[in-house]
Image 1: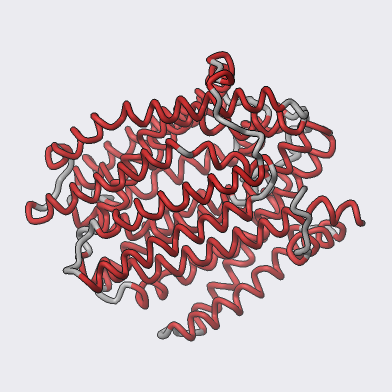
Image 2 (image 1 turned 180 degrees about the horizontal axis):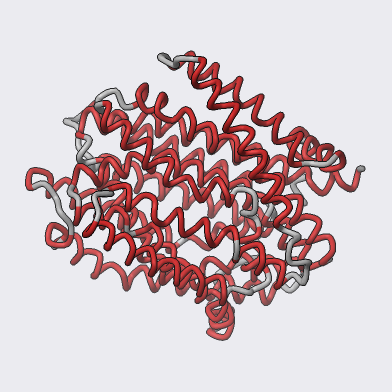
Length: 516
Protein backbone atom coordinates (compact mmCIF):
# COMPACT_ATOMS: atom_id res chain seq x y z
CA UNK A 1 0.00 0.00 0.00
CA UNK A 2 2.73 2.47 0.98
CA UNK A 3 4.68 1.62 -2.15
CA UNK A 4 1.65 2.33 -4.31
CA UNK A 5 0.97 5.62 -2.51
CA UNK A 6 4.62 6.73 -2.87
CA UNK A 7 4.63 5.82 -6.53
CA UNK A 8 1.57 7.85 -7.47
CA UNK A 9 1.62 10.75 -5.03
CA UNK A 10 3.67 12.95 -7.39
CA UNK A 11 1.42 11.97 -10.30
CA UNK A 12 -1.60 12.85 -8.15
CA UNK A 13 -0.22 16.28 -7.28
CA UNK A 14 0.80 16.91 -10.89
CA UNK A 15 -2.68 15.99 -12.06
CA UNK A 16 -4.40 18.34 -9.62
CA UNK A 17 -2.21 21.28 -10.69
CA UNK A 18 -2.62 20.47 -14.37
CA UNK A 19 -6.40 20.34 -14.03
CA UNK A 20 -6.34 23.65 -12.16
CA UNK A 21 -4.34 25.14 -15.01
CA UNK A 22 -6.84 23.79 -17.50
CA UNK A 23 -9.81 25.30 -15.65
CA UNK A 24 -8.14 28.70 -15.41
CA UNK A 25 -7.41 28.62 -19.14
CA UNK A 26 -11.03 27.73 -19.87
CA UNK A 27 -12.34 30.59 -17.71
CA UNK A 28 -9.94 33.07 -19.35
CA UNK A 29 -11.13 31.99 -22.82
CA UNK A 30 -14.75 32.29 -21.72
CA UNK A 31 -14.11 35.92 -20.82
CA UNK A 32 -11.75 36.98 -23.62
CA UNK A 33 -13.56 35.45 -26.60
CA UNK A 34 -16.83 37.42 -26.23
CA UNK A 35 -14.74 40.59 -25.75
CA UNK A 36 -13.07 39.99 -29.11
CA UNK A 37 -16.29 39.01 -30.88
CA UNK A 38 -18.35 41.89 -29.45
CA UNK A 39 -15.83 44.73 -29.43
CA UNK A 40 -13.42 43.88 -32.25
CA UNK A 41 -15.65 41.89 -34.59
CA UNK A 42 -16.58 38.25 -35.04
CA UNK A 43 -15.07 38.19 -38.54
CA UNK A 44 -11.58 38.91 -37.06
CA UNK A 45 -11.47 36.23 -34.38
CA UNK A 46 -10.34 33.53 -36.80
CA UNK A 47 -7.09 35.34 -37.55
CA UNK A 48 -5.78 34.69 -34.04
CA UNK A 49 -6.04 30.95 -34.56
CA UNK A 50 -4.80 31.26 -38.13
CA UNK A 51 -1.60 32.99 -36.95
CA UNK A 52 -0.99 30.21 -34.45
CA UNK A 53 -1.70 27.69 -37.20
CA UNK A 54 1.09 29.21 -39.30
CA UNK A 55 3.53 28.69 -36.42
CA UNK A 56 2.35 25.09 -36.21
CA UNK A 57 3.49 24.65 -39.79
CA UNK A 58 7.00 25.65 -38.73
CA UNK A 59 7.04 23.07 -35.91
CA UNK A 60 7.25 20.44 -38.64
CA UNK A 61 10.98 21.27 -38.64
CA UNK A 62 11.53 21.73 -34.90
CA UNK A 63 9.60 18.61 -33.83
CA UNK A 64 12.43 16.36 -35.04
CA UNK A 65 14.58 17.54 -32.14
CA UNK A 66 12.32 18.89 -29.42
CA UNK A 67 9.67 16.18 -29.11
CA UNK A 68 12.26 13.51 -28.22
CA UNK A 69 14.66 15.60 -26.12
CA UNK A 70 12.82 14.88 -22.86
CA UNK A 71 12.86 11.16 -23.47
CA UNK A 72 16.63 10.97 -24.12
CA UNK A 73 17.62 13.29 -21.27
CA UNK A 74 15.27 11.55 -18.82
CA UNK A 75 16.55 8.06 -19.60
CA UNK A 76 20.17 9.26 -19.28
CA UNK A 77 19.30 10.85 -15.93
CA UNK A 78 17.58 7.73 -14.60
CA UNK A 79 20.68 5.74 -15.58
CA UNK A 80 22.93 8.35 -13.87
CA UNK A 81 24.66 9.17 -17.14
CA UNK A 82 24.93 12.95 -16.72
CA UNK A 83 27.53 13.35 -19.45
CA UNK A 84 25.15 11.89 -22.02
CA UNK A 85 22.25 13.98 -20.71
CA UNK A 86 24.31 17.15 -21.08
CA UNK A 87 25.26 16.30 -24.65
CA UNK A 88 21.62 15.93 -25.64
CA UNK A 89 20.60 19.09 -23.78
CA UNK A 90 23.40 21.31 -25.08
CA UNK A 91 23.15 20.12 -28.68
CA UNK A 92 19.42 20.69 -29.03
CA UNK A 93 19.50 24.04 -27.22
CA UNK A 94 22.15 25.42 -29.58
CA UNK A 95 20.37 24.08 -32.67
CA UNK A 96 17.08 25.65 -31.51
CA UNK A 97 18.70 29.07 -31.21
CA UNK A 98 20.36 28.78 -34.63
CA UNK A 99 17.08 27.71 -36.21
CA UNK A 100 15.25 30.66 -34.63
CA UNK A 101 17.69 33.14 -36.20
CA UNK A 102 17.33 31.45 -39.60
CA UNK A 103 13.54 31.87 -39.45
CA UNK A 104 13.58 35.64 -38.89
CA UNK A 105 13.92 36.68 -42.54
CA UNK A 106 11.25 34.35 -44.03
CA UNK A 107 8.83 35.31 -41.26
CA UNK A 108 9.31 39.04 -41.91
CA UNK A 109 8.78 38.48 -45.66
CA UNK A 110 5.59 36.50 -44.94
CA UNK A 111 4.21 39.33 -42.78
CA UNK A 112 4.98 41.96 -45.43
CA UNK A 113 3.12 40.02 -48.13
CA UNK A 114 0.50 38.46 -45.86
CA UNK A 115 -2.45 40.03 -47.67
CA UNK A 116 -1.33 38.22 -50.83
CA UNK A 117 -1.25 34.87 -49.03
CA UNK A 118 -4.58 34.93 -47.17
CA UNK A 119 -7.85 36.83 -47.52
CA UNK A 120 -7.92 39.90 -45.22
CA UNK A 121 -10.54 42.67 -45.17
CA UNK A 122 -8.80 45.78 -46.47
CA UNK A 123 -9.73 47.82 -43.40
CA UNK A 124 -7.84 45.42 -41.08
CA UNK A 125 -4.71 44.56 -43.09
CA UNK A 126 -2.32 46.49 -40.83
CA UNK A 127 -3.86 45.13 -37.61
CA UNK A 128 -3.68 41.54 -38.85
CA UNK A 129 -0.06 41.95 -39.98
CA UNK A 130 0.92 43.31 -36.55
CA UNK A 131 -0.89 40.37 -34.90
CA UNK A 132 1.00 37.84 -37.05
CA UNK A 133 4.34 39.58 -36.42
CA UNK A 134 3.89 39.51 -32.64
CA UNK A 135 2.82 35.87 -32.62
CA UNK A 136 5.78 34.95 -34.85
CA UNK A 137 8.23 36.73 -32.51
CA UNK A 138 6.68 34.93 -29.54
CA UNK A 139 7.12 31.62 -31.37
CA UNK A 140 10.83 32.29 -32.02
CA UNK A 141 11.42 33.13 -28.35
CA UNK A 142 9.61 30.00 -27.28
CA UNK A 143 11.63 27.78 -29.64
CA UNK A 144 14.94 29.32 -28.52
CA UNK A 145 14.34 28.46 -24.86
CA UNK A 146 12.08 25.41 -25.11
CA UNK A 147 14.80 23.05 -23.84
CA UNK A 148 14.45 24.58 -20.36
CA UNK A 149 11.20 22.62 -19.99
CA UNK A 150 13.04 19.30 -20.07
CA UNK A 151 13.88 19.58 -16.35
CA UNK A 152 10.26 19.35 -15.20
CA UNK A 153 9.85 16.21 -17.31
CA UNK A 154 13.04 14.61 -16.00
CA UNK A 155 12.10 15.25 -12.37
CA UNK A 156 8.40 14.47 -12.89
CA UNK A 157 7.47 18.00 -11.81
CA UNK A 158 4.63 18.52 -14.25
CA UNK A 159 2.98 20.64 -11.57
CA UNK A 160 5.54 23.33 -12.42
CA UNK A 161 4.48 23.15 -16.05
CA UNK A 162 0.94 23.69 -14.84
CA UNK A 163 2.08 26.66 -12.76
CA UNK A 164 3.77 28.12 -15.83
CA UNK A 165 0.58 27.61 -17.83
CA UNK A 166 -1.45 29.41 -15.14
CA UNK A 167 1.08 32.25 -15.17
CA UNK A 168 0.88 32.44 -18.97
CA UNK A 169 -2.91 32.58 -18.99
CA UNK A 170 -3.01 35.23 -16.27
CA UNK A 171 -0.45 37.47 -18.01
CA UNK A 172 -2.20 37.27 -21.40
CA UNK A 173 -5.56 38.00 -19.82
CA UNK A 174 -4.32 40.97 -17.75
CA UNK A 175 -2.36 42.56 -20.63
CA UNK A 176 -5.27 42.16 -23.05
CA UNK A 177 -7.79 43.57 -20.56
CA UNK A 178 -5.59 46.59 -19.75
CA UNK A 179 -5.02 47.41 -23.42
CA UNK A 180 -8.74 47.06 -24.18
CA UNK A 181 -9.57 49.53 -21.39
CA UNK A 182 -6.88 52.05 -22.27
CA UNK A 183 -7.02 52.14 -26.07
CA UNK A 184 -9.39 51.64 -28.97
CA UNK A 185 -9.91 47.85 -29.32
CA UNK A 186 -7.64 46.03 -31.78
CA UNK A 187 -7.04 42.36 -32.51
CA UNK A 188 -3.24 42.71 -32.19
CA UNK A 189 -3.59 43.39 -28.45
CA UNK A 190 -3.76 39.60 -28.13
CA UNK A 191 -0.29 39.38 -29.68
CA UNK A 192 1.12 41.83 -27.13
CA UNK A 193 -0.19 39.65 -24.30
CA UNK A 194 1.24 36.53 -25.91
CA UNK A 195 4.75 37.94 -26.40
CA UNK A 196 5.01 39.33 -22.85
CA UNK A 197 3.69 36.03 -21.48
CA UNK A 198 6.25 34.07 -23.50
CA UNK A 199 9.15 36.14 -22.19
CA UNK A 200 8.13 35.83 -18.53
CA UNK A 201 7.30 32.12 -18.82
CA UNK A 202 10.65 31.42 -20.49
CA UNK A 203 12.35 33.04 -17.50
CA UNK A 204 10.21 30.95 -15.15
CA UNK A 205 11.23 27.79 -17.03
CA UNK A 206 14.90 28.81 -16.70
CA UNK A 207 14.53 29.21 -12.92
CA UNK A 208 12.92 25.76 -12.71
CA UNK A 209 15.75 24.28 -14.76
CA UNK A 210 18.35 25.80 -12.45
CA UNK A 211 16.64 24.48 -9.32
CA UNK A 212 15.69 21.01 -10.57
CA UNK A 213 18.54 20.06 -12.89
CA UNK A 214 21.41 22.44 -12.24
CA UNK A 215 23.64 19.73 -13.71
CA UNK A 216 22.31 20.56 -17.16
CA UNK A 217 24.39 23.34 -18.65
CA UNK A 218 24.95 24.61 -22.18
CA UNK A 219 28.68 24.14 -22.72
CA UNK A 220 30.53 24.26 -26.02
CA UNK A 221 32.48 21.09 -25.26
CA UNK A 222 29.19 19.21 -24.68
CA UNK A 223 27.85 20.00 -28.15
CA UNK A 224 27.69 16.83 -30.21
CA UNK A 225 26.32 16.41 -33.69
CA UNK A 226 26.23 12.67 -33.00
CA UNK A 227 23.88 13.24 -30.06
CA UNK A 228 21.73 15.58 -32.13
CA UNK A 229 21.75 13.09 -35.00
CA UNK A 230 20.68 10.29 -32.66
CA UNK A 231 17.64 12.31 -31.58
CA UNK A 232 16.97 13.43 -35.14
CA UNK A 233 16.88 9.88 -36.53
CA UNK A 234 13.97 9.07 -34.22
CA UNK A 235 12.50 12.56 -33.99
CA UNK A 236 12.20 12.94 -37.77
CA UNK A 237 9.20 10.65 -37.51
CA UNK A 238 7.61 13.15 -35.13
CA UNK A 239 8.24 15.90 -37.68
CA UNK A 240 6.48 13.84 -40.31
CA UNK A 241 3.76 13.15 -37.73
CA UNK A 242 3.39 16.91 -37.22
CA UNK A 243 3.04 17.31 -40.99
CA UNK A 244 0.41 14.58 -40.92
CA UNK A 245 -1.48 16.35 -38.15
CA UNK A 246 -1.50 19.51 -40.23
CA UNK A 247 -2.85 17.56 -43.21
CA UNK A 248 -5.58 16.13 -40.93
CA UNK A 249 -6.78 19.30 -39.20
CA UNK A 250 -4.14 22.03 -39.46
CA UNK A 251 -5.25 23.35 -42.84
CA UNK A 252 -8.92 23.76 -42.00
CA UNK A 253 -8.81 27.50 -41.22
CA UNK A 254 -6.63 28.24 -44.24
CA UNK A 255 -8.89 26.22 -46.56
CA UNK A 256 -11.99 27.89 -45.12
CA UNK A 257 -10.39 31.32 -45.55
CA UNK A 258 -9.65 30.61 -49.22
CA UNK A 259 -12.80 28.69 -50.22
CA UNK A 260 -15.59 29.95 -47.95
CA UNK A 261 -14.52 33.41 -46.78
CA UNK A 262 -13.57 35.32 -43.64
CA UNK A 263 -16.88 34.91 -41.76
CA UNK A 264 -16.94 31.13 -42.20
CA UNK A 265 -13.32 30.99 -41.04
CA UNK A 266 -14.22 32.85 -37.85
CA UNK A 267 -17.25 30.63 -37.24
CA UNK A 268 -15.06 27.54 -37.64
CA UNK A 269 -12.45 29.09 -35.35
CA UNK A 270 -15.08 29.80 -32.68
CA UNK A 271 -16.38 26.24 -32.99
CA UNK A 272 -12.87 24.91 -32.30
CA UNK A 273 -12.28 26.83 -29.05
CA UNK A 274 -13.98 24.42 -26.66
CA UNK A 275 -13.00 21.24 -28.59
CA UNK A 276 -9.37 22.41 -28.50
CA UNK A 277 -9.62 22.94 -24.74
CA UNK A 278 -11.18 19.52 -24.26
CA UNK A 279 -8.61 17.84 -26.50
CA UNK A 280 -5.99 19.69 -24.48
CA UNK A 281 -7.52 18.23 -21.32
CA UNK A 282 -7.21 14.70 -22.72
CA UNK A 283 -3.59 15.31 -23.70
CA UNK A 284 -2.84 17.00 -20.36
CA UNK A 285 -4.20 14.13 -18.26
CA UNK A 286 -2.57 11.48 -20.41
CA UNK A 287 0.82 13.22 -20.44
CA UNK A 288 0.73 13.57 -16.65
CA UNK A 289 1.42 9.82 -16.54
CA UNK A 290 4.18 10.00 -19.16
CA UNK A 291 7.19 10.71 -16.89
CA UNK A 292 6.27 7.70 -14.76
CA UNK A 293 5.85 5.57 -17.90
CA UNK A 294 9.29 6.58 -19.19
CA UNK A 295 10.80 5.82 -15.79
CA UNK A 296 9.16 2.39 -15.45
CA UNK A 297 10.02 1.53 -19.07
CA UNK A 298 13.70 2.21 -18.37
CA UNK A 299 13.62 0.13 -15.16
CA UNK A 300 10.98 -2.63 -15.25
CA UNK A 301 8.95 -3.63 -18.32
CA UNK A 302 6.18 -5.45 -16.44
CA UNK A 303 5.73 -2.44 -14.19
CA UNK A 304 5.55 -0.32 -17.35
CA UNK A 305 2.70 -2.44 -18.74
CA UNK A 306 0.83 -2.16 -15.44
CA UNK A 307 1.29 1.63 -15.38
CA UNK A 308 0.20 1.89 -19.01
CA UNK A 309 -3.04 -0.04 -18.47
CA UNK A 310 -3.91 2.07 -15.47
CA UNK A 311 -3.13 5.35 -17.24
CA UNK A 312 -5.45 4.30 -20.11
CA UNK A 313 -8.41 3.77 -17.82
CA UNK A 314 -7.66 6.77 -15.61
CA UNK A 315 -7.45 9.10 -18.62
CA UNK A 316 -10.72 7.78 -20.04
CA UNK A 317 -12.43 8.04 -16.68
CA UNK A 318 -11.43 11.66 -16.07
CA UNK A 319 -11.80 13.10 -19.58
CA UNK A 320 -14.78 11.39 -21.22
CA UNK A 321 -17.47 13.12 -19.13
CA UNK A 322 -16.59 16.73 -20.13
CA UNK A 323 -16.51 15.62 -23.79
CA UNK A 324 -19.93 13.97 -23.62
CA UNK A 325 -21.42 16.78 -21.57
CA UNK A 326 -20.38 19.40 -24.08
CA UNK A 327 -21.71 17.40 -27.05
CA UNK A 328 -25.16 17.20 -25.38
CA UNK A 329 -25.38 20.65 -23.76
CA UNK A 330 -23.10 22.64 -26.08
CA UNK A 331 -25.83 24.58 -27.87
CA UNK A 332 -27.19 25.95 -24.58
CA UNK A 333 -23.64 26.94 -23.65
CA UNK A 334 -23.09 28.81 -26.92
CA UNK A 335 -26.42 30.64 -26.64
CA UNK A 336 -25.36 31.99 -23.24
CA UNK A 337 -21.76 32.66 -24.25
CA UNK A 338 -21.90 34.17 -27.75
CA UNK A 339 -24.84 36.52 -27.34
CA UNK A 340 -24.05 38.51 -30.49
CA UNK A 341 -24.36 35.45 -32.73
CA UNK A 342 -27.71 34.62 -34.31
CA UNK A 343 -29.52 31.26 -33.96
CA UNK A 344 -28.27 29.96 -37.32
CA UNK A 345 -24.64 30.77 -36.48
CA UNK A 346 -24.99 29.16 -33.04
CA UNK A 347 -26.39 25.99 -34.60
CA UNK A 348 -23.54 25.87 -37.13
CA UNK A 349 -20.94 26.40 -34.40
CA UNK A 350 -22.40 23.59 -32.27
CA UNK A 351 -22.53 21.11 -35.17
CA UNK A 352 -18.93 21.91 -36.11
CA UNK A 353 -17.88 21.49 -32.46
CA UNK A 354 -19.47 18.04 -32.27
CA UNK A 355 -17.85 17.03 -35.55
CA UNK A 356 -14.47 18.18 -34.18
CA UNK A 357 -14.96 16.14 -31.00
CA UNK A 358 -16.06 12.87 -32.60
CA UNK A 359 -12.58 11.36 -32.73
CA UNK A 360 -11.81 12.50 -29.16
CA UNK A 361 -14.83 10.55 -27.89
CA UNK A 362 -13.04 7.41 -29.08
CA UNK A 363 -9.39 8.31 -28.46
CA UNK A 364 -10.03 9.36 -24.86
CA UNK A 365 -10.08 5.69 -23.84
CA UNK A 366 -6.76 4.77 -25.46
CA UNK A 367 -4.87 8.09 -25.63
CA UNK A 368 -1.88 6.98 -23.47
CA UNK A 369 -1.13 4.36 -26.13
CA UNK A 370 0.16 7.16 -28.33
CA UNK A 371 2.96 7.68 -25.78
CA UNK A 372 4.16 4.11 -26.28
CA UNK A 373 5.22 4.94 -29.84
CA UNK A 374 7.68 7.58 -28.61
CA UNK A 375 8.78 5.70 -25.50
CA UNK A 376 9.66 2.58 -27.52
CA UNK A 377 10.92 4.62 -30.50
CA UNK A 378 8.53 2.77 -32.81
CA UNK A 379 7.34 5.75 -34.83
CA UNK A 380 7.64 4.65 -38.46
CA UNK A 381 4.27 2.97 -39.00
CA UNK A 382 2.22 5.37 -36.85
CA UNK A 383 3.60 8.20 -38.99
CA UNK A 384 2.97 6.42 -42.28
CA UNK A 385 -0.65 5.63 -41.42
CA UNK A 386 -1.32 9.19 -40.27
CA UNK A 387 0.28 10.53 -43.45
CA UNK A 388 -2.06 8.43 -45.58
CA UNK A 389 -5.03 9.69 -43.57
CA UNK A 390 -3.81 13.28 -43.86
CA UNK A 391 -3.51 13.10 -47.66
CA UNK A 392 -6.91 11.41 -47.83
CA UNK A 393 -8.41 14.15 -45.65
CA UNK A 394 -7.06 16.95 -47.85
CA UNK A 395 -8.32 15.30 -51.05
CA UNK A 396 -11.76 14.46 -49.62
CA UNK A 397 -12.28 17.96 -48.16
CA UNK A 398 -11.40 19.65 -51.46
CA UNK A 399 -13.69 17.30 -53.37
CA UNK A 400 -16.57 17.89 -50.94
CA UNK A 401 -16.13 21.66 -51.09
CA UNK A 402 -16.19 21.64 -54.88
CA UNK A 403 -18.91 19.04 -55.54
CA UNK A 404 -21.28 19.13 -52.54
CA UNK A 405 -23.17 21.67 -50.43
CA UNK A 406 -21.63 20.47 -47.15
CA UNK A 407 -19.61 23.69 -46.93
CA UNK A 408 -18.02 24.21 -43.48
CA UNK A 409 -19.23 20.81 -42.24
CA UNK A 410 -16.98 19.05 -44.76
CA UNK A 411 -13.97 20.87 -43.30
CA UNK A 412 -14.93 20.17 -39.68
CA UNK A 413 -16.00 16.55 -39.97
CA UNK A 414 -13.83 14.71 -42.49
CA UNK A 415 -10.68 14.53 -40.36
CA UNK A 416 -12.65 13.26 -37.35
CA UNK A 417 -14.20 10.40 -39.30
CA UNK A 418 -10.82 9.36 -40.71
CA UNK A 419 -9.24 9.62 -37.23
CA UNK A 420 -11.91 7.33 -35.78
CA UNK A 421 -10.93 4.68 -38.33
CA UNK A 422 -7.29 4.92 -37.22
CA UNK A 423 -8.13 4.98 -33.51
CA UNK A 424 -10.36 1.92 -33.67
CA UNK A 425 -7.98 -0.19 -35.77
CA UNK A 426 -4.33 0.76 -36.01
CA UNK A 427 -3.57 2.30 -32.59
CA UNK A 428 -4.63 -0.60 -30.31
CA UNK A 429 -3.36 -3.30 -32.69
CA UNK A 430 0.04 -1.73 -33.33
CA UNK A 431 0.52 -0.96 -29.63
CA UNK A 432 -0.12 -4.61 -28.84
CA UNK A 433 2.37 -5.62 -31.52
CA UNK A 434 5.28 -3.43 -30.41
CA UNK A 435 4.72 -4.28 -26.73
CA UNK A 436 4.35 -8.01 -27.53
CA UNK A 437 0.93 -8.23 -25.91
CA UNK A 438 -2.22 -10.13 -27.02
CA UNK A 439 -3.72 -8.31 -30.02
CA UNK A 440 -7.10 -7.69 -28.40
CA UNK A 441 -5.70 -6.56 -25.04
CA UNK A 442 -6.20 -2.83 -25.56
CA UNK A 443 -9.65 -3.23 -27.08
CA UNK A 444 -11.09 -4.07 -23.66
CA UNK A 445 -10.79 -0.52 -22.23
CA UNK A 446 -12.00 0.91 -25.56
CA UNK A 447 -15.07 -1.35 -25.60
CA UNK A 448 -15.95 -0.67 -21.99
CA UNK A 449 -15.44 3.03 -22.60
CA UNK A 450 -17.82 3.04 -25.57
CA UNK A 451 -20.45 1.22 -23.50
CA UNK A 452 -20.05 3.74 -20.68
CA UNK A 453 -20.28 6.64 -23.16
CA UNK A 454 -23.48 5.34 -24.75
CA UNK A 455 -25.14 4.99 -21.36
CA UNK A 456 -23.98 8.48 -20.33
CA UNK A 457 -25.14 10.08 -23.60
CA UNK A 458 -28.61 8.57 -23.20
CA UNK A 459 -28.89 9.80 -19.61
CA UNK A 460 -27.66 13.30 -20.53
CA UNK A 461 -30.02 13.50 -23.50
CA UNK A 462 -33.00 12.71 -21.27
CA UNK A 463 -31.89 15.41 -18.80
CA UNK A 464 -31.52 17.95 -21.66
CA UNK A 465 -35.13 17.31 -22.68
CA UNK A 466 -36.43 17.65 -19.14
CA UNK A 467 -34.60 20.90 -18.27
CA UNK A 468 -34.66 24.12 -20.31
CA UNK A 469 -31.31 25.81 -19.70
CA UNK A 470 -31.68 29.59 -19.97
CA UNK A 471 -29.13 30.95 -17.48
CA UNK A 472 -25.52 30.41 -16.44
CA UNK A 473 -26.65 29.40 -12.96
CA UNK A 474 -28.87 26.64 -14.30
CA UNK A 475 -26.14 25.49 -16.72
CA UNK A 476 -23.64 25.20 -13.86
CA UNK A 477 -26.14 23.27 -11.70
CA UNK A 478 -26.89 20.87 -14.56
CA UNK A 479 -23.15 20.48 -15.25
CA UNK A 480 -22.47 19.54 -11.62
CA UNK A 481 -25.40 17.11 -11.54
CA UNK A 482 -24.44 15.50 -14.85
CA UNK A 483 -20.78 15.38 -13.82
CA UNK A 484 -21.67 13.41 -10.70
CA UNK A 485 -23.91 11.02 -12.65
CA UNK A 486 -21.39 10.59 -15.48
CA UNK A 487 -18.42 9.84 -13.23
CA UNK A 488 -20.52 7.37 -11.25
CA UNK A 489 -21.41 5.56 -14.47
CA UNK A 490 -17.74 5.56 -15.53
CA UNK A 491 -16.60 4.26 -12.16
CA UNK A 492 -19.08 1.38 -12.27
CA UNK A 493 -18.47 0.42 -15.92
CA UNK A 494 -14.76 1.06 -16.52
CA UNK A 495 -13.03 -0.29 -13.40
CA UNK A 496 -12.83 -3.46 -11.39
CA UNK A 497 -12.64 -3.35 -7.61
CA UNK A 498 -8.85 -3.03 -7.41
CA UNK A 499 -8.75 -0.32 -10.08
CA UNK A 500 -11.45 1.68 -8.29
CA UNK A 501 -9.30 1.72 -5.19
CA UNK A 502 -6.25 2.86 -7.16
CA UNK A 503 -7.95 5.73 -8.98
CA UNK A 504 -9.40 7.06 -5.72
CA UNK A 505 -5.84 7.12 -4.39
CA UNK A 506 -4.60 8.93 -7.51
CA UNK A 507 -7.24 11.67 -7.18
CA UNK A 508 -7.22 12.25 -3.43
CA UNK A 509 -3.65 11.53 -2.35
CA UNK A 510 -2.09 15.00 -2.50
CA UNK A 511 0.96 14.67 -0.35
CA UNK A 512 4.12 14.29 -2.34
CA UNK A 513 7.84 14.17 -2.12
CA UNK A 514 9.40 16.70 -4.46
CA UNK A 515 12.38 14.44 -4.99
CA UNK A 516 10.44 11.70 -6.74
